[in-house]
Every structure is written in structure tokens, then in C-alpha cells.
Image (cartoon, rainbow, N blue to C red; front, top):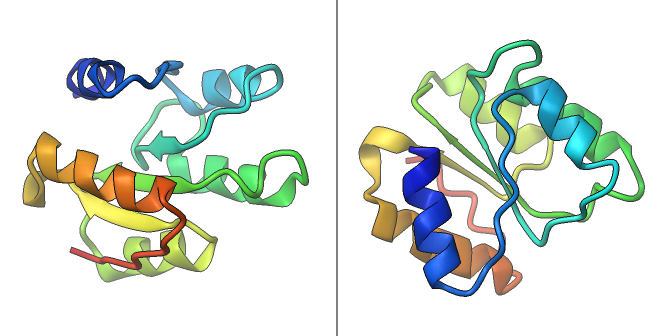
Amino acid sequence: MMDIYQTKLSQEGHSVIEARDGVEAMKKLETEKPELILLDIVMPYMDGIEVLKKIKERDDLKKIPVILLTNLSQKEEINAGLGLGANDYLIKSHFTPSEVMEKIKVVLGGEKTGNKS
């Protein structure tokens, strides 16, 4: 899935920084400050909820919009992610890559969508 979104984002003129796990993501955020973070919850070493907590605790990162893009659809995960400050929570199986790109455009435009689908 990461490759699909990397391609789509690159085609839209965005540069993409990949991280395969939560520890790598936090390490890259030490030197890179992206305009948006697409974050899965299920990741090795440090899950996405923990990464989101760490992002929102840091003054230099907390204003970066975060979209959780995951297969987890339980209400607890959705509420936890949005409660920690995610701009949106998208369940992979409910959205096509093109629809996810539309959500990204909305978030980069400054709107908080709060969509839980």
C-alpha cells in the first residue's frame, strides 16, 4: 500500500518520506518535517497510536496534520486516534487510493474532517 500512495503523492507533486515502522518514523521526524503524515496503526516496534502520541507531545511536530490510514475499524481505535489529535481516521478497505488522495487534499487545505468511515 505504501508504494501506491508514494506514487500517487509523487504524481501530485509531493515529496514522500517512507518509514517501515514506528521507530524509523520517529527517527526520520528528527530531521524531516513533512507537511502531512499518513500513519498506520499496525506497525512493528512502535504502533501508530504510540507514534501519534509522541508526535502530538512535541512542539516541533504537533502541528503537522496526521491521517490514520489503517485496517483497524474498532470504535476504540477510532476514538483513540481522533482523541489524540489525528485529523482523520480512514479504514483502508473503505476507501480507494483516489478517495484517500481527496481526503489528503482536504486536510492539507486546513479542514479537520473527523470522518470515521
